[in-house]
Length: 475
Image 1: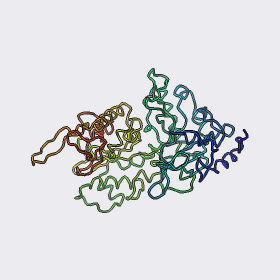
Image 2 (image 1 turned 120 degrees about the vertical axis):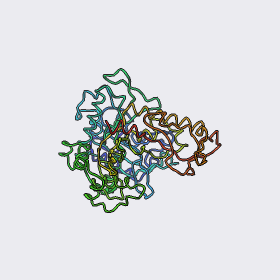
Image 3 (image 1 turned 180 degrees about the vertical axis):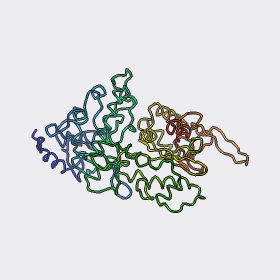
Image 4 (image 1 turned 45 degrees about the vertical axis):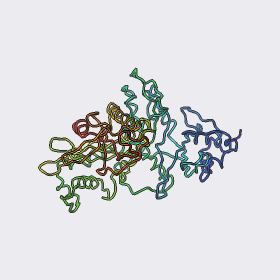
């Protein structure tokens, strides 16, 4: 069959692809496609490949358009309340071959052969719409900016080294900045052989993190998503300095200074020391000032590298004995959602597989001193511990066994005692409310057996303060 474009001519391929913009699969594909049952993730791209570009979907190691070295990638968009578009998910690339990658150089790797030049097609995902009626919003090619490419190379090398160390089963998306190693496969994990370790590892694929994909979208649509500061100013700098080194160098001259000294240095003005969250406000204001971030914005939303790498910034206040004053909380989970999740695609695991920047301040003679700054991502063994907390929580909600009894305090106030995992249950994480108002609730999928309640106070997962001290601050 004669193709309506020249597969040996990049311009011809891109021009033909751009005809898709503003169309749906139902509009551009042969009517025969409507007779097929296309369900499940990934089928949007498969339909395009077979019925628009005229080649059968495949898993070959080279790029889809072999003659021009271009790989076709489709990905869903979500529309925000302000009508702007963002990536709905990370961009999954090719499967990592654990056995072969350890003998490859980046320039000759399967990753680079397949993904050096991408043809990106973004479509708007709308709940309730048939896959054939998703509107294609953006179409363009993508070549990595030279500075980004240096960071991606370092990410690839880290992934390769971990596999070479016999730790493919310990890979985490939090290991790297832009290029991740995400799990890829069904509920069973699709375990694969790894070198230098007799234990098999879950199948993983290279992926570009969701934050990075948002910047790709902004670039090809010529619609900037914000004015960002940059840590890594050029390809030359990227070769010499990692994101981690660039950040630590900004903090190093400030270590040991008190809150009042830093307030004066960064001209933060008066912050009332009598307000309840004084120290929290001071520490966050100082961090923002270090990165030239306006005080009304989050740090990670204003530094380009932080946004692309989805780095989560956590400011921790330590007591004089090194124990954090508080545990670290995560967003509230919804009871009706958690029972339908699997661990590998759960919101909690997704957060834990991010890279974190911890900024530690310590109380000393009633003053707050900047002590330490550290990049961190949760080790594999600790993720397994957090999984136990998540599984127990899911089981409790599913069975409707949240409340196990009641207790009365010295003032006669009665409160509920839950079965949710406490600090005694697990050294890493626990579950408790993030609100003091018990009337802030989420619906329950199963009525609580003891109280007969159909909804319950909002709860969230926490990292234990002892874990933060022992495994993050002191290490």
